[in-house]
Figure 1 (cartoon, rainbow, N blue to C red):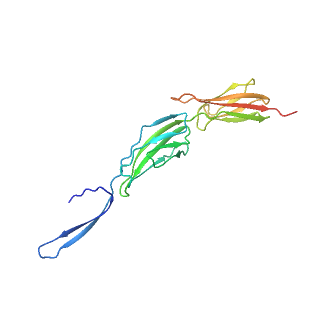
Figure 2 (cartoon, rainbow, N blue to C red):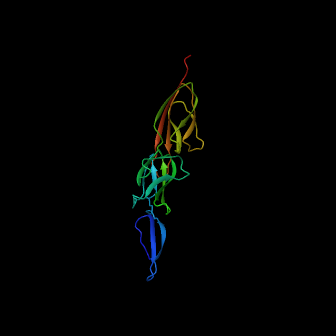
Figure 3 (tube, one colour):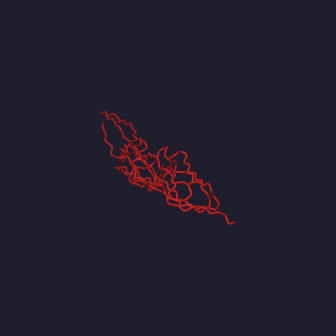
Length: 212
């Protein structure tokens, strides 16, 4: 006999044999049936320019009563982002930094069947960061920092006295600055992302001399 199943679960079948006037005999078989879950699919890979958020899109569940879908981020991501709704096929993910992320949409159904999954690659080029104003007293050496993971160039864009700027590596988001107290300066970080427009962060610095 051949049977078609529409729902997962445990099924008990009984086979009975009758032979004329003899007593009948029967035997049972138990089948644990799992209907395979929906095949997981995702949208196209993304490049995110100058943002810390992305929208992830996976397919909806065919049998939501018995299936569960969930998003994960695979190892190797530059940080641990935050999902707005980890179980929603379409959801936002926040707190991204510059780098590459692989997000996985997994659909699980009956325990007797393997899960299905699909991966979505997201390359993020985060903003340079918010402008700042720094006021020091007798300080001649300090660090400037743009958004974590950002790449670009720090430069002096205002000030009579010429500061010394050291970036290591040369496209680092962090720069060591050496100045002369008693002067004001303006420094600008400009991103150098390929495929994205440039973004800037401006830092105004004043280092006062102590009263005589």
